Length: 458
Image 1 (spheres, helix red, strand yellow):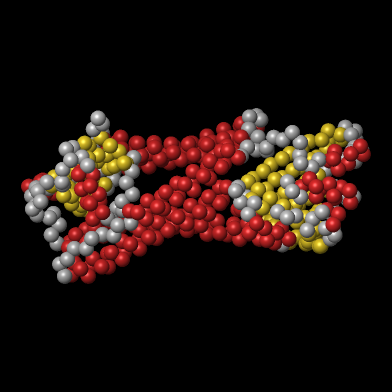
Image 2 (spheres, one colour):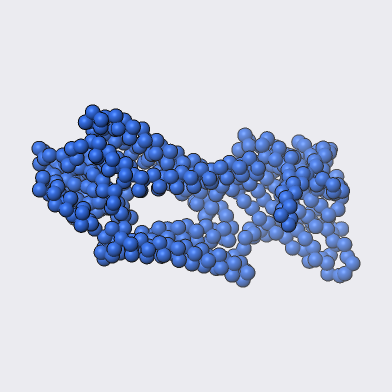
């Protein structure tokens, strides 16, 4: 029978009421809180009993402390004399328990308790959630800007879709936690003036739901990447995931190891931060360097290997295709909402002076019909921003309607960039596919029909 148990708890740092009730339930099941670490709450087995718990705060404490400070130890000795036994601490939070039903409460002055709690929250709670909220809102705004400027790029990227869901969840958790605490703090201030204590709000279930939703979204995003992408992106994804997990494990482990060895707060903080910085830069450099070397040596390929493109020059030209060494490339980016496939075929003449054709096309497959019009509009009104020597230039593409019948399409445009001479570049709209295609020659009606047959329902 195991004597310890480790759990990841989702209790708010300021929720002294919720923490106390939770620990009472655990003690009734035979588990007493022993310590709080970077890797969860550790309980030790006891005989199931009814215990009372008290949660207080010591603002001067730190999560890097190797143990109770001298002042804290004096405080613990005083509580011991009143029947309350020290159990564990979580940064500024101090946890005590007693088996005496009539033991005098540790906190008897609501105003002093509220002042102490608020001082502790300003040291840990507000900075942590404030940073999380700022980062979440920053990336959420960036994701929304990407969605506005490049909806196709967002809809076809599993990572971007995942971020579009995950950042709002983190921002919402931060906002709710901060708002819940401030609302309680104002109520507690008024009650303290009358000598009354107010229970802290319990956001446990909300945090559980949000954390579960975030983990499910995270897992589905990475599962899709690992099962649907080329070997290049799978290796990159696995490297980033391992990098994140290793960073969390090593940094948290170093801090806990130094605490166990009773290293001082200042040394622990300095060493932990140094390990964090060195490991972060070192591992990221290793990932980038390793990926580049592997790609240069051909061990990884960012393009998806295909035996043959969906549409080839040989199919378009038949026996009239000039003899040359033809090379094709195929890349893809896909999500459950949309997919973008890029095909390109170029020729390397075997003899000088021989004119050879080239073909370049992009097929956007819209898997969710509701997104079709937005993606179509993006292509028709496409623009590109160019920065050259600190001069930003926005170039617009001009789309001129042309006959869609030869292509077997619903709509067709001949496209060119402003101030440029129209060439053989086209935008074609099918039932669920959008096709951008560029020829190095003027296609015949038979070749246009073949484009519709091959790419219109890819």
